[in-house]
Image (cartoon, rainbow, N blue to C red):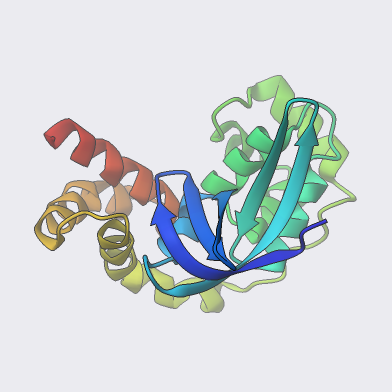
Length: 201
């Protein structure tokens, strides 16, 4: 098993990062939050989970080991494959998922594309004793509430957009961020920003 990949960021796409390791480009499927932390041409270390199928080998990359562990734990629930587990982590941080399961927050799970009301109820039952209690605190995420604009702008520039385009995209998604409850999720905002940029081109 490949536990982590460490090297230079060779390419970034909306759902993939290519890390050059010893002259070989390793393609990793990543959540928008993880991609937002990477910069082209700079060194990076991503924790990984290798998913083996009959016709494919897919490497999933994560900013930290906690995210990787939650990704693997989510797949122990029936009906949850790697794509759905990654979609859950694209919408919620590991701690937000723990909180949702601990408080039976069905609404939080149905916010994930592909999870309906019945699916959410089943997941809440199955994951109850697997994910554990939330580890973070509200104070720990407070700085992100102010820094989402900078993070989003840097992520867009890292994906190859001009600073002016990144500025316009940040402005376009500001109402979405301000309407969000609690800390804006940079990953979700990145998706929305990419949609506005694609429409503008």
